[in-house]
Amino acid sequence: MVDHGGSLGRAKALFPHAPQPFVDLSTGINPHSYPFFELPATALSRLPEAARVRDLADAAASAYGAPSAANVVAAPGTQILLPRVASLVRPGKALVLGPTYAEHQRAAAIAGHAALEVDDFDALAGADLAIVVNPNNPDGRIVERKKLLALAERLRARGGLLVVDEAFMDVGPLGESLAGDVEHGGIVVLRSFGKFFGLAGLRLGFALVDALTVERLEAQFGPWAVAGPALEYGLRALADSGWQAEMRHRLARDAARLDTLFDRFGVPVDGGTTLFRYIRLRDAAGLFSALGKRGILLRHFSGRPQVLRAGLPGEGEEWQRLESALAAWAQQRHDNTSEVQQ
Image (tube, rainbow, N blue to C red; front, side):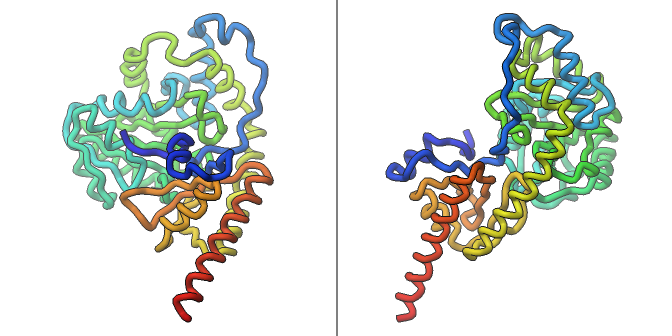
């Protein structure tokens, strides 16, 4: 298994004496979740009705810009979709545009592919299965839609498949989404519900594909793949365009505020999305450790020691704790520099 952000158990093991609760900035999950509401009792007491699942597919198609509900597969999170989507083509060469979310390479290997991560977009044309995260996690890189469509056409001509993980496209440039292009075939778009709506524990995600592939994927899941509570939250939140628009503005303000705070203490932000910021710093490990000891958890990457990712703080106290921790780290760096100079 690959290490991920969001593990408070791991944080407690790394920083056993840190003040708690942790301010968990190690994920890209919206700290301002969609408002909770009272579920109908039937969401828990009855098996989900097929009609509600169709309604959810309709809501997802409208929210994400897919051609129709016939192009939507609802699942208990996109994570469970990854190896199934990778299995849509016969085992061959899978190339993942990196550096990025490590689970794609692992899922492709589970599906029998020889899976590699590459840093050259043009190299993807030689794959049987090409995978692009757009916007990218953790640096926020955007690949233009026209480039992705050209790649999909090349792959489709020889039976290949392009998978575009748009987990953070809710806060990305919507015009670069391939959601509206999936009926052409040879393209799978993955959309995550939990990140933007701040309900990761609900476990809800979608694959947007051509109608024939929808049938193949749904046959693997069988009935009742999505739990009743997830159905109800998905139906309401995906249709709530007012909340979505307001939240995009709020996240943009929070991301700008976070950039300003980091800059004040000499921490350079080098990309990201409005749900997470990407930091390149020579002493990234030192910053991770210093903040962790003060109960502030960032995301670090064992294979990229100069990189950190920081999610957004939630309420005022979390911002205050982050500011205090950064100030203490900056003061310690200043004191150490002064000692060396003396």
